[in-house]
Length: 277
Length: 270
Image (cartoon, rainbow over all chains, first blue to last red; front, top):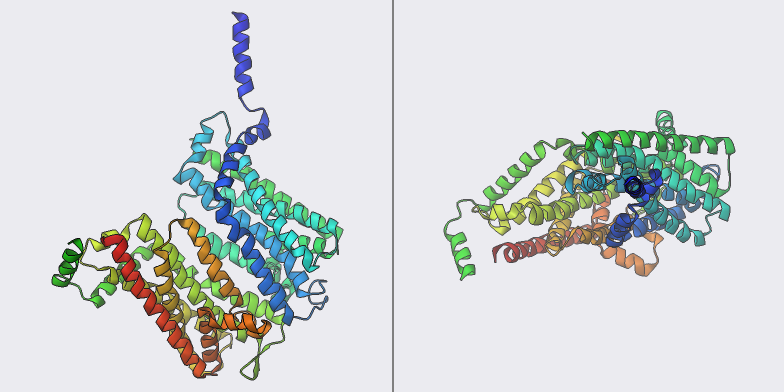
């Protein structure tokens, strides 16, 4: 009898996830199936779009721009200047795309999250699994992007490109966690139109991806300097061009990591309040 | 038989004229957008952001381009291109995403057809709404160009009607193509067709950047015709080529509109 009881306890304990990572890992099959079913639809936006931008802006428009390192933050051609900017912008747009409408769908439209929470999984495990998927999406699109840019001869060193790849993951998370938190508590999707038009597009256009922010007016330059995308662009550019300024690089990493961590806690709080009440 | 009754019914008792029907649909869309006015307003900002970023920011790195024998500063080169491109993008949004949603998801057109409205009324009304919206955005953008001193000719007043032609051409054809779409996944094809046009139609740099064959292809695309038309008007350098662009865009729009009417007949009335 006593043994039976022990057995039962043992059994129950082994079915519950052991820690955050184990819990999130149990959703691996869910996200694998999601990706298997949807990757075709994302091929054009994830892979073709950035390459067309590089071709139009970097190669063709770049053909009319003098490769003056003094005017291009140390790059010797406009293509070498714009390529890291475009990679960073791609990491950002991928993150935006994955944690806006999809999150609202999971909470409000098809309520998949409620199904997940009804199992032994906790809210933070569900969020971690979703963010894992976002990171995977950022990783694949940015890896393809960097690989395609390599033959153009715009990267200074292999180590630099590898470093730049990891920076994209950090940058993706720095955007993903706070926006995830925002989406998780949102009642109505019409706010997303503003998030994209007044948030993502101005960041894309004014955070140093296409031109050095010193070309902006002083107050706009100061504003650009505090945006997370600028930190990501500058760090990526340092790495791909091979002009690493260590103290500045540390500032960039610390800023992006702080944003990602703060966003994480906010996301857990907002989603818990939305789903468990 | 069913065909006969519908056409007889329509011919016999249509209490609304084409003009009234269009007015009703415009009013319906106005009511629908009244609560989401900020979506309407913010649509205007996108091309302005592009103008400031690419035209002004990147413009400081480019010396300027030759256009019809005169050198013009980069911002002045880009601005008409942005106007034309945003006329395309704006009309695309209404004629693909919004049109598809109304057709397939909230079944708005089925409901409209239960009233005396005809499929042609719907096609005309939806297109008029998207043109009205595009016209407002273009006029506002022209205002920004004027304020920045990027306009050098009185012909520029005609830039707004030119943008409407672009809206008509893309709106008509894209609505027609949308009637063949199966799911949201198909919208990737819209991006695949329009993004290259946005980037390569002499919007950001002159066509002289291309080898001759590619250049010839670019010059045949509707957005290129629109971009050049707007640029010719903004700089006052009109030519017979401008007339070709006008005829091209009008034909494209009207053909699209006729196809939309036929397709809606087929999808919703049989």
